[in-house]
Image (spheres, one colour):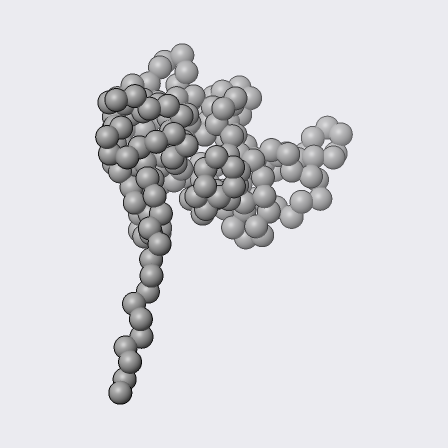
Length: 178
């Protein structure tokens, strides 16, 4: 899972306690504030990034999901080429993800993995999001977008983790041999 591939992350576990039927792919409410959860912290499940904390009360936090077509945007890169982009929910709001604003000449292909870039509101790099499933060219031929197959199942969000910080791991010093 996420923790095994990113051992330098400190994750607070939480539970989804609210989800609107009208806004199923936009937000969820989770337990927790006192455990250090703050706005703009990334929220993951066992498979990958699902969103970010956007508001906090005394006992709960609101999470905007990546699948939100208005507010879920996040900066990303492809692991294979480091090509940057923006991942956001599909325009229909049906739970799909897409990478947008890609010039037609960009070096990206189906199967490439997409991870967070560490730029923008979410200052964490290399959190897994998904793989490029399909590339769609725009009608004018200038731009393309990539349909992303998310690692996380956005229909089954019961338990999540909030990444509250990255620990800086300092390797032990080499022993001095006399």
